[in-house]
Image (cartoon, rainbow, N blue to C red):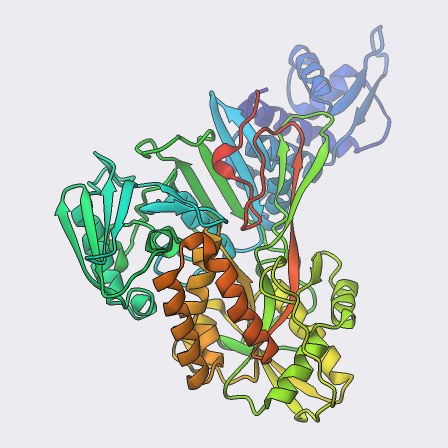
Length: 588
């Protein structure tokens, strides 16, 4: 039934509520008509319609002045919520909010109930909820896990790279490396455009990479690039000063997504080159729509809306300044340890609830800051403590919603590193911990606090906003002894892991100058001599050495979970813990 008609019926129903809700009422038709301020004939019609909707039960008695039975099933607030839920399913979000008097908490609950797919006027819509607003979706910004997922949806790269280092076409249909001239050539598809219709050619790509090379956050990765030139409208040439057999895979990283050059300085609206384009990005909602000018296969869904529905706060949150001291009562807010998106098909009567899950490519880990007064024996002792079953058991006990397994290296399949410490060294009386505001990190920091308290060490925890944490790491300004962070590699796993070791500011904040020199020499050797599929074997050796030395302290891997109903088609969980939105479809 149309929402507008329900609104009119709601007005009449509200007049009946003065008679009593959820109780048997003996009443004549004329009395009901009088309560609703309408005629007896119209009253009969309204009662039949409201009974069909399930709002009330009407048992008419035959005969003049006979008292009929009336039972109202809903209070006004509960009926408002019911109608608002129907409005949301029809995409009438503003009307739903107005009906429930702009009650944001109730609106969030209704959004969760209606999450999933919905087909309206022949167009397929996906609606999801998430616990926080998304940061600006720009490839050159420091990005959290979920933001990197959406960067993949909005932008394309020159190439694509999978978890095994296999490079395939994207905006470029062909590429080649000349070992003699040290030149990589990328040949673009013809007639490429951005999602706003503006031209995307080799000149655009060359200008973009020339500007990226000048930015501090890209300098280390592009240091070996001597020049970037568009030799034709569809061919761009990168000239290097050393061999780099994995360069085509590096350019598949989300940081190298193709965007207009002007967007590096100012982006009043997001212009991308991917399967979806941004229709709205506010503190309340991110709305994407299928990009009609996308060069590849069109998304099966027409629109995707992700609404911000904050998780319930536990305890209190200290919001004084960008960084604050945390206590046991601090609220756990931000990203969860799993991306537990729930998909349900609107109107399904008996959904078959299923799950997809995977162990993340990465881990939550602590890094010992170079400013910390901790020698190698003390670092190894901390590694031994953090690798204990007690830490993970304590975390699971207090954070049952976040599923984890112990981590002994950066990737679950890498060598298990043990750091035996035969002599138990004394630790400082106090150890400071720095994290950014995210649920799993805050929970892990509190677990580490309890663990260290058992060996006589007191902890101070400083919680930063993510952007502040990233900026201070870039400047080498973080002074806490331990920095706990979340490491998630992207779908281009070999080049993503390589890039993390080559230029991650938190990692380099924690290494001494001699360790930095050694690490960069090793990485230079890898890219000069190894093909991309062989990167991970080489990187495993480096990670193992840093862990054995007590610089990196892996804590646990997240078990990412995606809940969905079996009536959905094409649901798969990706490395970011999200569903593959471009492939979701419905039979209806």
